[in-house]
Image (cartoon, rainbow, N blue to C red; front, side):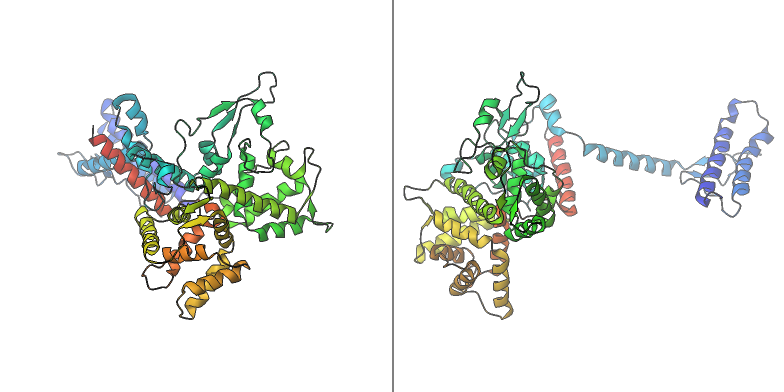
Length: 508
């Protein structure tokens, strides 16, 4: 088989340029003028002999028209100086900007210049990501300066766009040191219940001195005490990376997906599954749920000695669980996580928080700018001053709200039906929809607060788009959002990185 035409063209051009180069160097050798004039012709002859139908092509850098240069001299290659200069400048600029994107400016700052700390992490800002530093009450968050705001913005981007492994390593705070007497006991990293909640909640800062590869150390004696009691999120519980993936799957996946997977693996029809079958189920559920696709490649089954594996399947992992037992475990787990988050807002002696803090709790995971969040909170404060709305929210009201979130698809469908019928959604309609979807009476306090927050025009009509957008951000503790940045977001981040580095370079 003959090689393709492109191969012949490449070979012929190579031979031609070899002869041209040899001609340029011929002045250093004793060659007759006839031989010098014949060198370019030999290259062209090779090209025409190999592929005669192709017209000879020349490099854009050269003009081989063989202009005369004095009497009797032809065939000298003429270099276009202007084109060569433009080509070199273009290539130099392209290489400079390519290298600039890989330069770690912070390393140069720490090593040589000692720039101000306020520039730290500012290249990671993005307006499309929630960077709200007012997501928690003043008592809990304290006073924060410009530096703290930038760190919180950086941590919010880690929560949204980083892999599960990096999120775990950044927010974990405990490292079990290896046991020198037992080589099998190597160093491991664990989360506390508050670490796990920090990894889910935007705006909740990591404690000072903790971060990526920065941990509090402990020994294996501490790990042996980390057993789950009646409270799933007690202070002694330590969460490993496989358990972290397991908890994310349980909290975010719908009960219907778990029920379907249970029925598929229940071959004998007794409704019971063992430890190995359950590990397969959670892997399948991560692949079924589109919002868990970023975790589907994490092959992290529950380890035999982990706290949650022992809690579900016993010390020897020989116990089986039913679907109802697992759903009850899921419900208790959600309540435990919700209780930890509720305590962040410092409830009073009657175990209630203010309506404003409850609104900020709802908006903490919303994909809204800080200004938009303050507008929503302002509507509630205005309604509290002019209408009879409850000013305190109990933990039972918060539970009722998260029960509503678990049925958000049905709520969206019902409200869309009202919109298609060209009917506005008033307070009574919203209450009726919640009653139908959750199969239980709606909390009057929750309905009043939600309606006050999303009554944009003060016309006793719910702002449908804003309400649905905020509610979807809270489904599954915020795990329902897409963790993969769009292409436009990546280009915008590159642009901001270049602008930031130019600002740093010019501020020296």
